[in-house]
Amino acid sequence: MRKDELVIFYNEPDEKVYVKVPPGIETHYQLSNLAGKILQEDVHTKALHDFDLAGLPEGIYFVIVNQDDIIRSKKIVKNT
Image: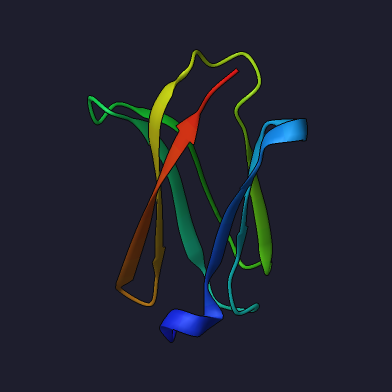
C-alpha cells in the first residue's frame, strides 16, 4: 500500500470517519481514544470502511489501518 492509496477523512456532519484502501487485501481497522483504548475494530477486504463517532464525546481519536504489515494512522479531532 502506497501512501497515496490510503485516504482517511472525517465527515463532521454525519460524524463518521471514512477509510479508503486498495480492495481485495485483508485490512485491519482500529479506532482508539487518546489513552490508547480500542473503541472500534474490524477486519475485512473491502475498499471502504467507516467508523461512527456519534455518541462519542469530544476529543482526540486515532484511526489505525494495517494492510500487508504496512501501518498508517491519523489523528481525528471531534468537536461538537
